[in-house]
Amino acid sequence: MQCADSELKLKSDSPLSMASVETATLSATDCATCTYVVPPDSLIVDGSVLGLLPGSVIGLSASVSYTKILFKNIIGTEEQPIIIKNCDGTAIINGTGLGYSMKTMNSRHFRITGGDGYQTYGIKVNGGQMSVTLDILSTNFEVDHLDIGNSGFAGIMAKTDPTCDDATIRGNFVMKNVYLHDNYVHDTGGEGFYVGNSFFEEGMTTPCGVRLPHEIHYLKIYNNIVENAGWDGIQVGCATKTARIYGNTIKNYGTKNVGNQRNGMQLGAGTGGICYGNLISHGTGNGMIVMGLGDNYVYNNIIVDAGAFGIFCDERYTPGPGFKFINNTIISPKSDGIRIYADLVPMNVIVNNIIANPGSYTTYKYPRTPQDAFVYKLSKNVKIDMSNNFFTTSVDTLGIIDLPALNFKLDITSPVIDQGRDISNYNIMTDFYKKTRLKGFGYDIGAVELQSPDL
Image (cartoon, rainbow, N blue to C red):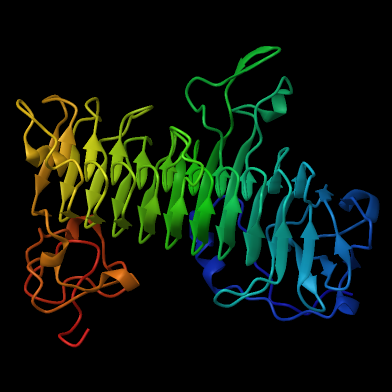
């Protein structure tokens, strides 16, 4: 028997199918209704050996103490993905001291889920060098509502590194329709999320020469909470087509303070698409580092108390028209608000951003000026369409209702209200709180649009 659930239908190639992710829900499950329940001490679940058909439901029982589990050959279809979920309560997988807690290989069209609803985590994964790793040609999958903690390295890793097997390299394999959402990832030794390879352009050296890593198409990372990541909170690479990273909360990142590995969010080489509505607060490194394809839209993000730059931007592989930073709020970075080295793209855009209290304001000397602390350009060769930003050395002038409580809504007296540039051509219809933009005579500056005097 299969669980009588409403199951997500993954589409293999259409980005429009991603809209179904937000509405898909799964009800509580009785283990007796599942196609297969993983037994105690089972280290490998092989869909081929078990004869699991598309639409099957694999149960992780709350009454069983699991260590590591390898799911291999879990093959559903677009219309009938295979579901891996908890049953009879909260399932626990403890891979402490092991290479991984949960791993997939040679699998496609599947979903690993711990339930539905806000901050519901029916599967708890503890430990493992890679707590959850979606590996070895896995594609077309969704992972949601997992509580993942105490990882030796990454909380969630999703990539197949290139090897001498031609099936792993660019041109032969594309990881696509990857949806990672509503997970709580915390206390990791390395990255909270490590999605895609970091060496998009230069490739990786293998015994058979340099091999280029695969691309990721139709990636969504959203509504996750990442706390106490030892390295980057969320790192993405090689996501070349329709990447969307939004609504995530990242707090206390880069706890190990390792150079170049301590960013709140990293949009690495080969990553395009849009990044919006994220809250990134308190870390040892940059709030956000953007080294994408040069077609990146970064808007409605709030970055507070970054340990270095609020946003750092540079080209690593940039065939696009330029980076766009619109309506972000950057508060009290230890160094510059935005530092941009992207001088090879035709035109960057920096409009309607709040940058308040940059730590480097008093440090610059001629030929630099204190204004470089707000937006620092590598040289005059960096081309920027820049206007309607609000720069201040005093956070108190912003009119934020309750910054210590991370309530970023504006008081009616805020000087940023109605002072923004018209951004209707960018199709940014809502603000950080998903409220309608353009509520007054003009657009407000920053990530939040004033909705009414009583907010």
